[in-house]
Length: 324
Ligand SMILES: NC(=O)c1ccc[n+]([C@@H]2O[C@H](COP(=O)([O-])OP(=O)(O)OC[C@H]3O[C@@H](n4cnc5c(N)ncnc54)[C@H](OP(=O)(O)O)[C@@H]3O)[C@@H](O)[C@H]2O)c1
Image 1 (cartoon, rainbow, N blue to C red):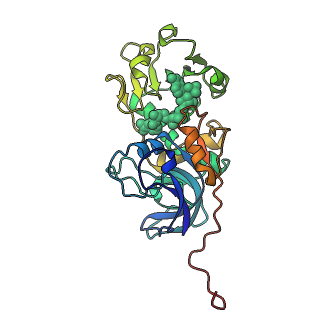
Image 2: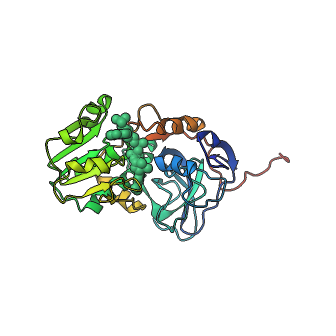
């Protein structure tokens, strides 16, 4: 058996309880991973508050994780026992079939194509912070057809997705101008991610922004207002559903280890950085506080849960000695 956070009814964070579930056996093409760190995303509490579709209960929440492969099913070709991996284990596009057992558990079984080798320079905490946010951030630029050297206005530059959208724009797409919005206390933080300009939304309206942009990348669902900073005919990406502006393009993440493998050189060279909220990481035993924090909507980068204090994995039950 293993420890896992789980809920048996939908509702506020208090429905999530620490419980025990069996350690899953890896099926063909699956890895069994001992989780060392997990990260929370808004989808984790949105699903708990308002399920998108019927899910068997109990549900173990969580998409993002980093850990070590401790066993593998038949047909696994890319990974070996002992490999350090990370990934988003929930394939949102797999016909709406989300896994009942998510990443807030000591051990998880996951298809090998959903994970990638952990970049060597990243801690488990840093690696766990990345998958959902980076997969989403990358997809938004792809959906928009964003090209190197163009300009982008990121609405919500301090959140999980926004911190990566700002960095990707500047460091990977070499955008000519990256502007991002945030509140007063986070202006310097967002500048440190590479934004050329930061708009303090508590003091400045979109109408007061001087330039117009080749892309508006809205991570907070404000496209009904933020579109005014787009150049005539320029794409407005909204990653919240449904977009508040019907003319905005909704962009949804592609869940795959491939994106994570592709960004590895950027992470290992230090061009792209994982942004772990300094209020955390929250110990596994305190995952409820992590939910409480992310649900404020005020996180700086990613809310991480770590360490997971699980004992070493034993592939089979230890031999009994003298009947014990
Ligand atoms: N479509 C997809 O595939 C996909 C994937 C991932 C996430 N999402 C969705 O995208 C949204 C963002 O996700 P996330 O993980 O980035 O959330 P998050 O990390 O919880 O975002 C928190 C950030 O939002 C900022 N914020 C809140 N109101 C703001 C405002 N009016 N203007 C500017 N910034 C504001 C906050 O900064 P301040 O404290 O400065 O306000 C905070 O730093 C969520 O709705 C999530 O469900 C969609």
